[in-house]
Length: 199
Image 1: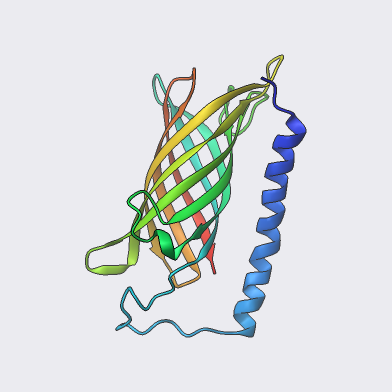
Image 2: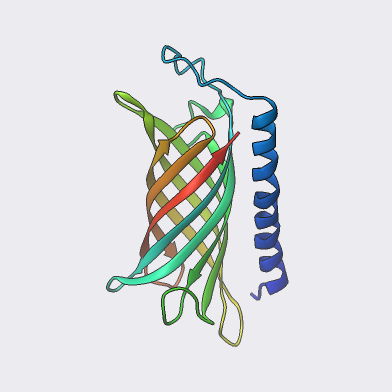
């Protein structure tokens, strides 16, 4: 099966343009309608039941066998749904694009790995703090390996465990560790940190 490179670059380019357009729009909306932080006595039931998250994460893969580091860039968008709050697998549906260097060097090479994936994320609180929460994240998608004579497409699966450091209702820092498996390729882990804008 051969994936059209135009499709892959169009998806990733469109997602990037959405990211560029949404961040200034959200900032302008916040300035026009400033919101006071929630009172300390606010309960979980009174907090917003849904939100949209735009995230940009940078990290390093550690390929197996061994621990060979490779650059990993991830951009995506997710939305929580109140009717999924009691779902054991997740309350937030996500879509993301990931680029990973699959050749020599760290940052980039002719051999790349482009992944478009959908996922479900489960957000959960941690005892005695609201400044930090945790999440699990399951993703499934298609990885396109470039640089060879033909583009090779493989099924991708990833499972992540992470922590969110909340600066306020709109801005947070995500830190995560992921286990990744692409069919026919040895498994690898990814350590990532990134900024998230929520509204």
